[in-house]
Image (tube, rainbow, N blue to C red; front, side, top):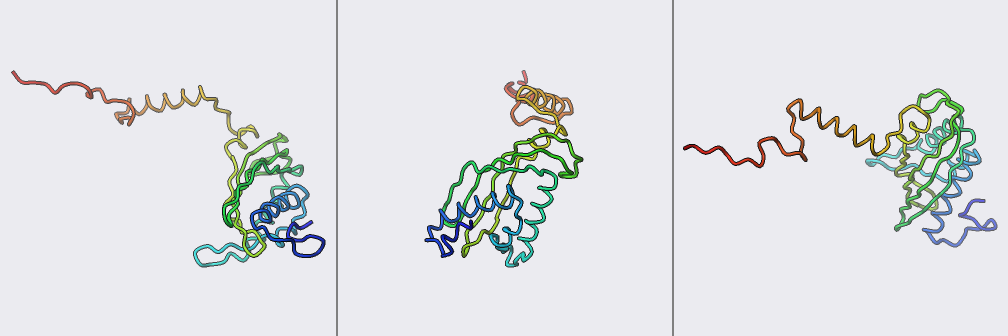
Length: 188
């Protein structure tokens, strides 16, 4: 049930609480249940550079439809929400199994758990999506497209890159050059 309404009447408005409930409802209905019509009811077009993107709710709906087509068992879990004035940061984890094309990749049939963040604003009882971010590197690693880099491998790669830069004559900002620390030559 729409959190903006209680028994058919407008719910008492505690903007941060209503904002949080509205995002949780959008995640549950649109992402987890696949009821994509909710997007148009909940989202308002954002204004960017004094122009309104009137089709933004339709684009969000299309993106979610593509995502759910690739990950039919999609399930997002809201991990944390922090509100400040009319802005809400929602940290979530997206779970599911890739059974369809995703990001141009063929189906891998691999499970995934991808952390992400949504930043929304609450305006006149609706959501304005300001920013969405997900760990795409982690997703690509889970799908087997990119290798996992453990810390020791990452350090080894950094050392190789540094050695290559030094060998090519480029100086490293953290490594002293061979001449640093030496006194200038004196003339007798």
